Image (tube, rainbow, N blue to C red; front, top):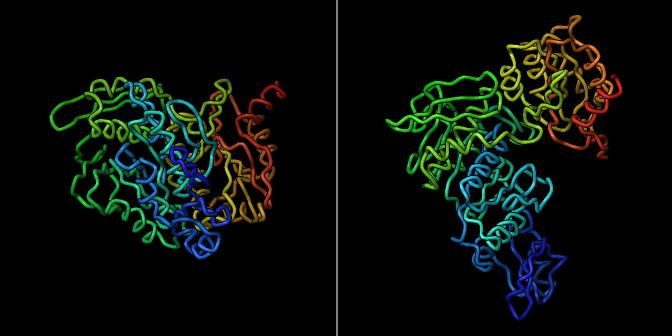
Length: 434
């Protein structure tokens, strides 16, 4: 990654790659590249600086308010909701996360890591500042916290969505995972915490809460989930109402977090914030309705908890669930995902997700180990054929839930990424099947 300092007569550039270093380079050192400091010096770089010093050098420090969101599920939707509300309220804002980077409704970067290397984030912040943005909303992954990929950033607000099992291939235990998430909230930055999440530990200085089940700063008093979401939220002693075209109890939490966040930023009165919620219809690949007749929904859910949330939101219908599990990831969640599918579904098809370097049939066997084998359970390793099979078996009053990949446009098998988009496959097959 290289950032040019055009305003300098010397035409210096900032880089985190020691191979790009020369006499006109400034090397930004991070946990990921600190072993290459000596090489950067050998290549005659003019200076070695920290990410914090880089923010000051580029004139970004204190120029923009950064909102960081972490949690197992809901980061992408909550971040997008905050971004949408701020735009609707007339603010200039940037958004960085799983879906890429957006500045004032313009996409400047395609999908990458949930939280990219720090110099990439600094680069995106620099563009946001140059475009006049007052706010920058970003997803913060547990990997990024461990690897200090947010080093040097000063957050105007930190938000917790929830904590459930995920990434145990990396963190090894749920206790370690909780410890990592809690580390993000151990300073005195303003923070907004899900009060219904009991596992998190946080510094209570400058902390506010939101919730549905427990008393909180922002508390849902009543709600309805039929044909969208409508709810009443209390802040201290005042009550406000909001409506959304989105579906699912879990999205009630995401929207409540977004409302609370924008209110904490003191952007506009609560009435205006709640009104702006109506214009946010969700993000691609998250409870995305691909077809209404038959009803087919695609979602990114790839953990037991994520599956529970999306399947429970459709429990008033007969559900066909199609899913798999990613290869080279936490194996302990696979049988639990199978159990969750069986808990809510009338019919199930277990298939491949992104098997990566693993044998997809082995992954499927591990999913099946948590399930009861019966006539409603089907296995089809080929994801395309699995979707075709699901559409053929779908009856009029059933909803087909295709889970795991969301808006991904590739399938990763043995080191190669092949074009594959669940949504495109569904549309193609519906035409084919007539």
